[in-house]
Image (tube, rainbow over all chains, first blue to last red; front, side):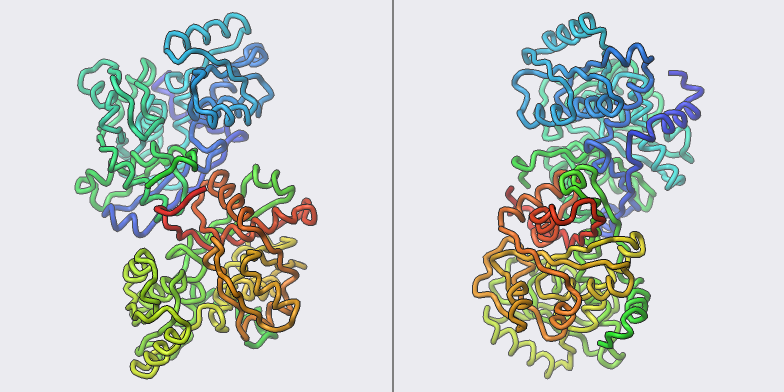
Length: 315
Length: 315
């Protein structure tokens, strides 16, 4: 990633993916503004195609392949939103997507991928099995592996949400995003550097999976020993492509308790009347936890997605 | 209501209430379009202030009072969205709202009214007690009674949602709304007459409370013997102000089963990522039930509100 040219690179990325993604709306709520003591601008990627920002990075990664590569398809391992995003982006471009998923992945996630015509390749529920099968598909099919978050084109694609947000609101003081694999926050940080006016980027992370918080302290990519957060999109760790960007351009990471995530999610559902997944609520939860430090500021908050299993919600 | 002048009357109403209401967004979904076989435009009154279209009618009714009347406050009986709407509209204008509610009304509804500074006056859970207390408040306080749906200014206010929708999409073939007390559909029908281009208005109504459907057949205002629908906003019957408008200008009423309401509501939550109340889903359920008759049409659907008790949702 040529860090010096990311302004034009981000603009090119926006143009490239425009036919395949929605420019999502930005919503505000008087009541949530009062509660936070700041002016909040929620960038609603829950309204993105397939229901999450991941569509942006997946589309960009596929569009940057050569025709020869595209003809042989793409492969990833994910049981979350990136699996759906890569499947839909591939379908939109008429190419093949192989999705490596653990055989015990929830049926609802398998159905979602199949709904977008991704071909599910099942393996045992270990990292070794997952990586072995991905390798095998790359070799046998000639498919190109695309990582859900640690890939330059994916990072740039995810950054376009913040580009759009800053087009509408160029004078934001802060942008808050959740931090999981690091693709969204790294892309957002590049966008804030390129198009913001002294706009700082802040990550929200569950205490239970605070690998990114610890990584910024230690200077190494830390991992999580347990993953039992309700913010199921944030269980993964950073990678060598996004970590340097995060080290350089992310202002800080605020950790939140599970209960704070639930409260923030409920506030968004009840007050803004939008369906967001728990991972999406982590950025807002982080702001609420630390709101004394952001009084009267203009704050963008990226709502990362809205894919929840309505059979399993409880407040 | 001077039916001949409703075009300018609606325009004046829009201007009058503009400082007190949101111009709500219109959302679309490729997936729901495919499912319905038509082009759908959802007017999202769940994003309206206090979470429902009722804010429009309440604001208009209060704004049309004289200063002397406003100084003495307003009164209504409702345990639903109109209670909140009148409270918030009154609060916004610095006047007093008395809300007659049965003593056994759910705590969450009482809290919502108090949140908007409405003064709750409790009575027994009978129509007689409700009306007696309303009368008493009118006499003792000099407050003006405002009916939730059978009031010309309320009807005109509710019609402004369709005015906005037709400003954005002037060539709609149909607008679907839920039908409960009749204020929304009557106002919508006036707006469609005034600003539509051969735009027909269709009501969705639960089979269990099909009073409006039966009223159109009999020519008299019919009532419901049972009220056990999940669409709790649609349990009331029509009134003498809105029924003539509905008779004259509403194309037809389509009745739906309770299960169809649930399916439609779930589709809206899952696919559009917005929180809507069961009553809101009735219009979409009606379209889905009868979709063969609306192939390839351009259809506005009014999402009436998004106030649900998240502790009690189940799909």
